[in-house]
Image (tube, rainbow, N blue to C red; front, top):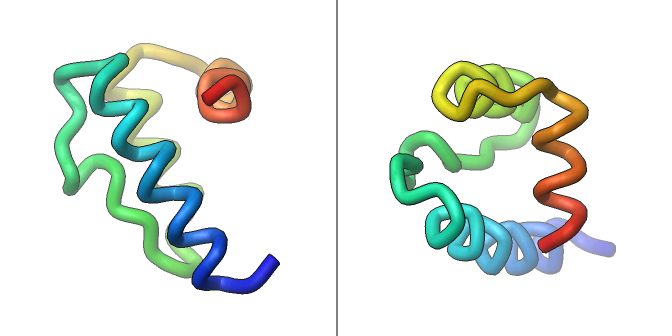
Length: 61
């Protein structure tokens, strides 16, 4: 899978996450190369979920 496909899939997943968790903003879900862990940390704080719970939520989308 190339970078364009990953970004395309992320855009779809980002939309679904925003529907499921209305408190999330585009800034919360900004995916940047090399900053994935930082993004997950922000999501953990904002949603009160563990890293494992976030991975399960995203995998289920």
